[in-house]
Every structure is written in C-alpha cells, then in structure tokens.
Length: 188
Image (cartoon, rainbow, N blue to C red; front, side, top):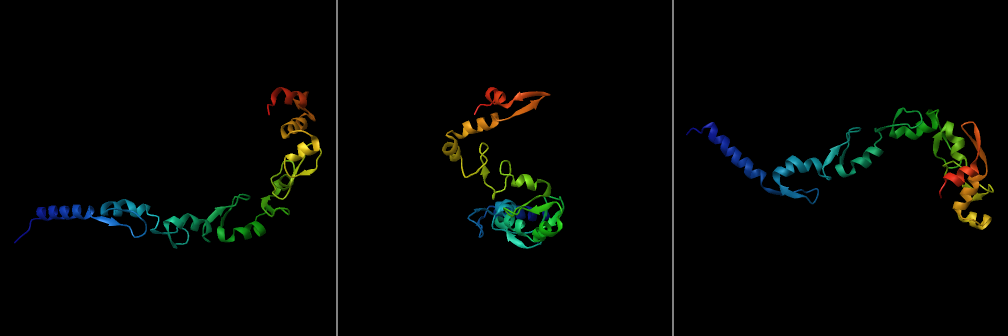
C-alpha cells in the first residue's frame, strides 16, 4: 500500500496538534500548562532554566544570572574616575594602583575623584560619612538638629534662615543683603 504525501502531512498535523495540547509541568518552577507554551514561551522565561554567562560561559539559573554577572571575574565595568573598561576581578587593584584620577579618602576609605577629595571631606558641603556635620552658626561639630534648639534656642528652620542672612553677595554687580533675599524669597 502506498500512502500519499498529503495524508501523511495531515496525520502529522493531527499528531502535532495533539502533542502541543498535552498538559505538562515544569520541574524547575511551579509553572504548568500546554506543551506548546512550554517549548515556545516558558523555557525562554523560566527562572530555573540554566543560562550561559556571556562573559565566562558558566551556566547559572536565570534567577541568579544578574547576581552572577556583577561578581563574574570576566565581567567588565567602566571606572567612574578614568572611564577605562576594567574587569571586575581586578577593579580594586585598578583603583589602588593604576587609576591616577582616584584616591582613597583617609577618613571613610571610599575612593573619590582626586579633584573633589577636599570638598568630599568638607564638613559643611561634603559627603564623607566619617565627617560629622558642622553648625553653620557656631561652627562646632553636631550630631543632629537638636543642637540648634539646645545651643541657640531655635528650630532648625530658624537657624537656617539666620545662617543664610549672615552675609551679603553680589547680584548683577549690585551688592544685595542676603538677609533681604532670604526674607523676600525663602519660604521654609
């Protein structure tokens, strides 16, 4: 008996349709559904499927890949100081020994741009975590805003206004009292 190609095609289509509707369960996560969805959609999104790192070729579950990439020794990131691309595995060495634009703060230990290190450590405008805040009125180191109430008998808002009123500045070649500017324009 000879089977025509057309009938074989329709039989294969019937089998394909049947297989695609078989209910399956993913063994890597709680997902379950049709076989067609599993092969065509789910395996591309499943967090349990092992995927290959584009940097080192290590296979890692998709759910852990982002964390792996940040720790991957072959992953490259850009140095925010000199803009060179450096492998993560040698990034600390680069900062300590190679990057001429980076310097470690002697107070907090974090790397800073050499040109901004002085401002970084400035108690009034800096961002160094090891340097405490300084009162703008009496210039002593303070822990929190209660200093203004305890030492000066005023709220933080009043202290800020008083500090801002304390000097004059130039606006368009005309000396303007900062006190006038604060009173007229600052609403705190």
